[in-house]
Length: 335
Figure 1 (cartoon, rainbow, N blue to C red):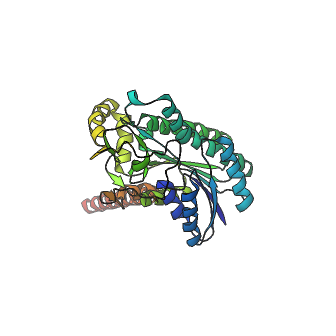
Figure 2: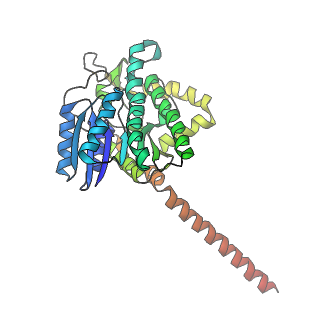
C-alpha cells in the first residue's frame, strides 16, 4: 500500500490529482478547507478502489497541517508521497491590493507549501525515503500583471525548494524533491478567486485541462527530477525571463492584461474563497472546456525527456557510424 497526501485536494488541479492517484493499493489523505467538497472527493476515491481520509485543514495553520500528517500516519502508515497543491490568488493591480490580501495569499500559497513540506520532512527524513511534489507555476519565474501576490508566492516556493534541495544533497538523503511548473489551467479558481478587474477573469491562453496536469504530477511523483516545465507556453515564459526579461515585461504589460479577462462584466457581488471556502462542489474543471486542450506533445516530451534523449543519442550514434563506414569504404575504393 502507498500513502499519498494531497493539499488543495477538493477542487481544481488538486482534485484532478486526487482522481488520478485513486487506484487500488493507494491510500489518499485529502487536505483542504471545505468538508463538503472533501467528502465528495473521498467518495470518488473510494469508488475507484482506493482508501480516503478527509482532513478539513487550512494549510496556513502550520500546527493543523502537522496534525493532519500525524493523523494520516496513524490511519494509513508512513507517508510515501506528499503533494502541495493548495493555493489562493487575487486578480488586481498592485495599487488596488491590500496588505491583508497579500498576507493571505502568502500564507496559503507559499507558507502552505512550507508547512506541508515541513510536516512531510519530519516523517520522511528519519526513514530516509519519500517524495515531496511542489505544484509550481511558470509564473514563479515570469511574473505577469494583475497577479502580483500569486506570482510572488510561487516564486518564493522556488527559492525555498532550491534551498531544501541543496540541504538534502548535503545530507545524502534519499528523500526526493520535485517541482511541476504549470501553464494556464481550466479550474474553478476563475469563478471564485477574489477579483477587482472590470471583467470576468480567465486563464491566460493557451489553456489546458486539469486532468492533463494531474497526469504530469502523477508521473513526477514516481519519476522525480529537479523540475518539470509543463507545456510549451510554460517553457517559453521561463526561457523568456532568462534570455530577454525586459522585452517580456513590455509584451506582458499589454498581452497579459486583457488576456486575463473575458468580455463579460465582473459580478462584484459573487463570493470569493480568499478567507473562506465557497459553497458547492465545482470539481476539477472550470468553464473553459471549449478552449482548453486535453493533450500536449510538449508535456509528453517533458515527462519522457530521458527516453527522447536516449533515442536522440542512438540516432546520432547511428548517423556517426554510417558516416564513418561510408568514408572508410570510400578510402578503400580509392586505394
